[in-house]
Image 1: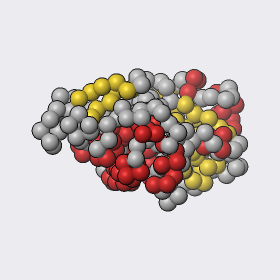
Image 2 (image 1 turned 90 degrees about the horizontal axis):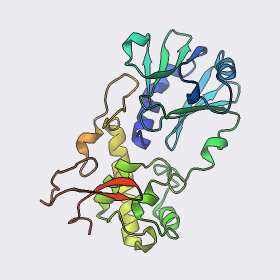
Image 3 (image 1 turned 180 degrees about the vertical axis):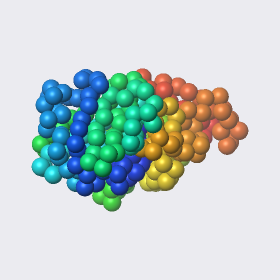
Length: 269
């Protein structure tokens, strides 16, 4: 699933192609991708609108439109946005195509079909349910400690809860906990202030590094150019089944609250 580094990469690379452009056409190949209104109404409301900006809120991409409305997207498990001139330049599984006034097209590619789009009047309809942004200056060790303090669930589950912290998903939670040397099954509320500080520092280190590497192409993630990200080559535990940790011990996979979790039992006791 595209997580914060992947969505941030898409936002940054998409922005120069779309900012200031006018939407001249919308094709919807999978009606279920559009939520909250009928596909024809969705097309009619978007056509003719100018894209003022593109923002990221957690794992959501939000296009600011010139009429004060917002086009919100969630890529879910397998979505990606490609910017090309024609469909022949993009692999199959295209669900929505948005044409711009310079002839470029935004292709919403989604092999598993779980991705979603909404047109909303207020961006808070999307962002109100999200926790704080982990890369914001307002996200401090004290904020993290407060968010974790009352959570009895395993720390792995709490880190990927979007209502607790926005944007962290399965693979980066594994990397963060490995970096912090915290066992993923530890109840979040049991962590000491020093351990919470280690998690905070790991978040602030791991996520920017992944953005610098253009995200991780583990399965279906692609950048708007169609190129893959490189962050997966820096992973220490995530998706490293049967690999060996730097300590010499094996990386193990367990299931924490239904989510596959990779960790080193020696380093994360």
